[in-house]
Image 1 (cartoon, helix red, strand yellow):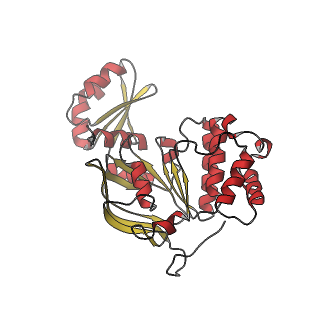
Image 2: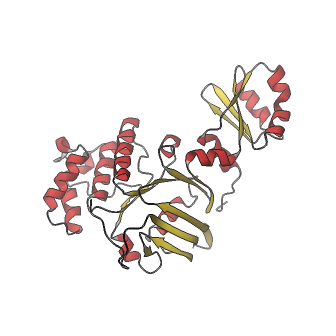
Image 3: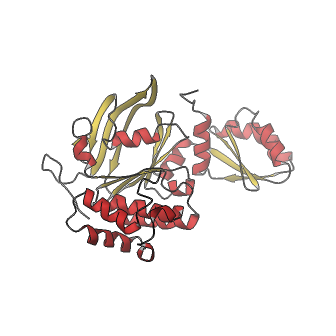
Length: 318
């Protein structure tokens, strides 16, 4: 994998992204508001949040692909406001929609990308990507005939072909089967181990838990960030796991109680959480002691935190 040195001649920075106060509006609506964060080299950094919450806009601003209305910072040692062209040379961007040529084969697509980036030996570069991603038996197949999982592998291969320092993945596994998703994440971790930094947006909790750090963005505002363990701990959610009969009716009743901040079904159980354990215990005391259901103390999950954060946010397009 190739590396590069920023224009000022310093070594590749340990902090790949360092931004403060980023704000972006479209059509008079603020999509991202006063966002500040740091991302260290070699991390897989996950972005979570509801649809339309500003995740894609945030990713693009962090990497110099979109200019903020206000705020400042650096990416890969380059200024995101004045050196975006330099940043783009070192960023691989995998969009939500498959963007390669459907009427070209896997090999032809990869060779084309290699030529666009002026690589010395496009065919050898394509061969290396094909071997790395296990595409040998499909190298001659047209991209438009591939399943979602194989298209995903091809798109990733094209992104990493020029050896970027930073990989930007916008909901890369939407609509892909679990086996293909796992293979994809194994490859992402291998790239991060080699020093590549990865920013990825996802709606899947199991994928978020595979990130080194995560950020929760809701309608333009950064509400939580850190490791998964830190985000869960900082939410301060006391949680009960409830099993037994009539859970649907119980859930509707619990939603009316002061002190119960989150109720969500998980399979054959309910997760019942509150931000204040004393108030939660008081609200559920009679149900826990005399109800037909079984209540047991549990640990809040990332999905519990995600649902709780969503309940406290307001759609800025509403």
